[in-house]
Image (cartoon, rainbow, N blue to C red):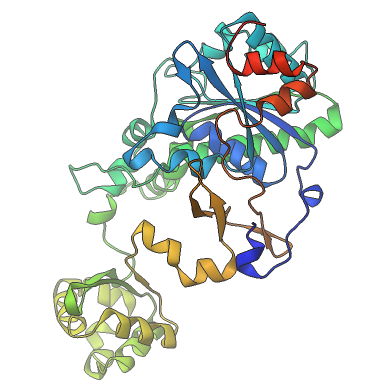
Amino acid sequence: MSDSTLSGLPSASPASLPYSGIRVVEFTHMVMGPSCGLMLADLGAEVIKVEPVGHGRNGDATRKLLGSGAGFFPLFNRNKKSLTLDLQTPEGKQAALRLIASADVVTENFKPGTMQKLGLDYESLRERFPRLIYVSHKGFLPGPYEHRTALDEVVQMMGGLAYMTGRPGDPLRAGTSVNDIMGGMFGAMGAMAALAQREKTGRGQEVQSALFENNVFLIAQHMMQYAVTGKPAAPMPARISAWAIYDVFEVQGGEQIFLAVVSDGAWRVFCDAFGLGEWRDDPRLATNNDRVQARSWLMPLLREKMAGYSASHIAKVFEEQGLPFAPIARPHDLLEDEHLNATGALAPIELPDGRASKTVLLPLTLDGRHLEVRLSPPKLGEHSLEILTALGYTPAQAQALAQGQPL
């Protein structure tokens, strides 16, 4: 089943997708590397996820995560095939090399030195496979910090994002894996650029993406704010807003809603819609800057006024008047979101345990179509026999390799 079932749009054939015919072999786990593979897979590439077996290992560890990690594997591994190999054995490594020989792109996101120990790093492969594009996702690009172990939260703290998100003296990480996901996206972008350049030169190259540098790019607007103004950026909860009405309001029944009135015209529309004519005509509130200066007395009065309305009523008025607003949604609420379901941004998927669910597609369309789910997240080793026999192994050899056993 594809997203066309939900959206009513015709589905694109796999051959029509941009990266159809491109083979990607990924040695990845967690979020950053799998995000890169997800994006290339959704765009049509055949992505083969090599998962560990033997020596006490049994697949990508995210298959078994609980709590906040429970969604990692099903989200970031759709449209991929799963191959199990024990890369610590000569036979497993040889099978990996056969597979790499058939690939356009290899991706990895292990600690520095891990792929080198296996003889599967770029330097070990570049001469043998000159057309190969090799994408490494790391904590830091080469430099003084490259030896450190990084996590999304680590780079949010050292890269200024936690400072900007939290209250003064209370740094707070963003509530999702922003650097892991965007680091994977920049890795995919680098792979796309390298594929385009290979069309011109005939040669592959190494692409590197890193959590820390990704985070710095996210926070760069505040770095440049300092460069331009000479004043350090204040954390979000403490900064003086550029707009007077740009906040979360608690309204009838304890509900919350975000409201924004960001122009002088919008202010007049807002006042008329809620019977606040005396404020509309108050010279102390004539311009946005005037209203920003008046926030200390205006906002308590406005909160009192809005508290008498329900969130649904306010939303209806704001929508009718073309004013920006937002309900405060929880992530699971979005599975039933009217817009996401109507537009096909959510698609049916089968979870690895066989249950049906919905998943979130990439936030783009090509020729009016979302990039659909062609393969649900694979079961561990689901495609091992298919892949290994295509590489020239007998079924018995393929079975042994997939189980980490000697040939």
